[in-house]
Image (cartoon, rainbow, N blue to C red; front, side, top):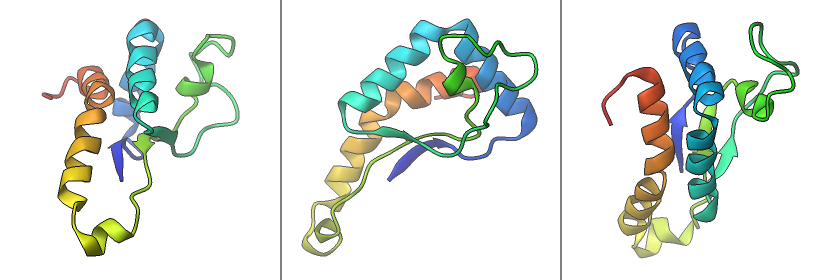
Length: 110
């Protein structure tokens, strides 16, 4: 399962990248929260920092992302033996700080 945004449009991508650099502590906290629940960053990244962003920024690797996702594997047996709804509900709740950051960056309600 995953939460986030895959290949945002250029305007949205720029907004997320700016939010990461301008609110680095908040972004790090959101990612740390996701990781603490086993939700790991996923998706592709650029080789170099995009134009207008410092390559030595402490979150340069995050700014280079093309996708802003966190994901976790779901055991296949949950699809057959029940418990899937409960696990997905918990996972989406655990992704809330990450999603809230992205929504703020995009000016979208959360």
